[in-house]
Length: 98
Image 1 (tube, rainbow, N blue to C red):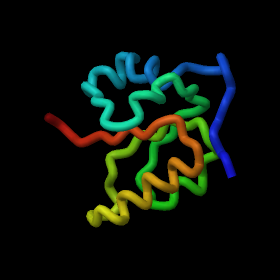
Image 2: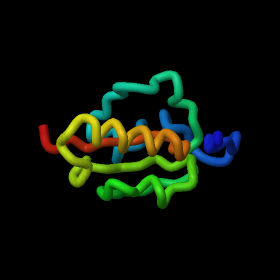
Image 3: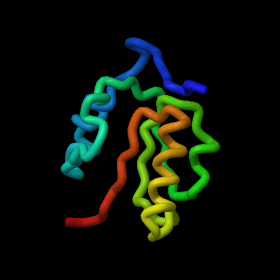
C-alpha cells in the first residue's frame, strides 16, 4: 500500500522546515533523502517509542533523540523502515549537544 502523502501546496516543505530558526539552530545535516526535501509536512510529532509509526498517518515530520530505539543497527533500520512505510515526510534525529 502506498501511504505517501500528497497535499500540493497545503503546508510547508521539509526544506522550509529545516530553514526555520528552531531547526536551523541545531545545524541539521541531510544524510539521506536530499532528493525529497520538497515533500510537504502535514504535521510535526516528537516521540521516542519504537512503535510510533503505528500512530502516524503520513506526511509527518518526526523529531526524536533516538532514545528507546535500541542500540542494534537491525532495530534502528527496522524503525526507519516502518516510518518510511507510513509515508512520513522526514525524520529528524537530535544527536545531542556538540
